[in-house]
Length: 120
Image (tube, rainbow, N blue to C red; front, side):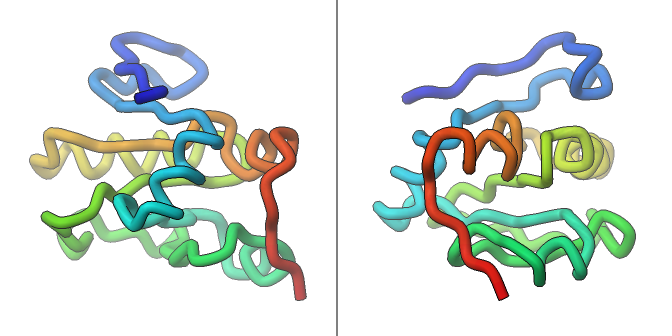
């Protein structure tokens, strides 16, 4: 698996234990039905361009207490470049989620890697 655990990384707000996945790895997991992608960008960003099948849960309305725990699939957070999804991950860890996944580089890295997006 193309994932790594971040122990200390200032680019991701010092989130300890955040499991980071490369965009191609996330794409493979989505295609295999092994993961769900949660986009924490704002509504206007999501409406403008998004990863097919990603669910929107804007960071401005993010509620870690109401975040779904899905046993059958990995939940991977993403945003535009990784900062907001790391912040959401930190919120989840603060309420007891022990295994939080995040896509490295966000939508920017996804597109840089040549993966498809949807636009309106």
